[in-house]
Image (cartoon, rainbow, N blue to C red; front, side):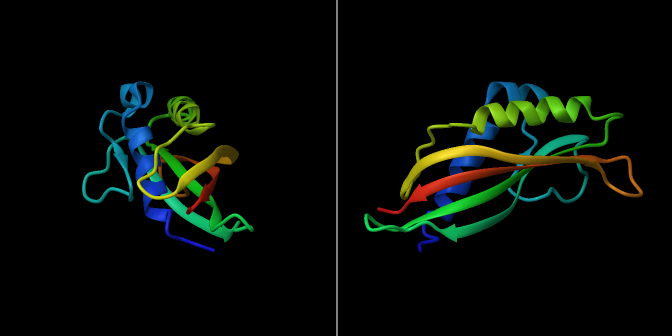
Length: 136
């Protein structure tokens, strides 16, 4: 197994989301690779946890990354958050991302969970995407 492609994959996913016109139309520059500190925007996207398992085979090193991308909103209802989540999903599903190390074999949607954060007005949608990478 190789985790060597992890940083390259995160960077490519971040850049794809942050540079997409539809996502920018909703959240502007409020795309983060970690939850923002200080004054939190009313609507934003952040990269979240990642789980990686070995996917090496006889042809080389590889891994499957389960990457969480979250949309958070303090707006009433889930509509705007779901619109942003759809835009993010449109960017990532079957994306042909160029990595600085390794190669992306495929990127697909796995699941999403929409919920209210207890004791707050914040709505959160956590989407999990699966990326298969090779480190050849």
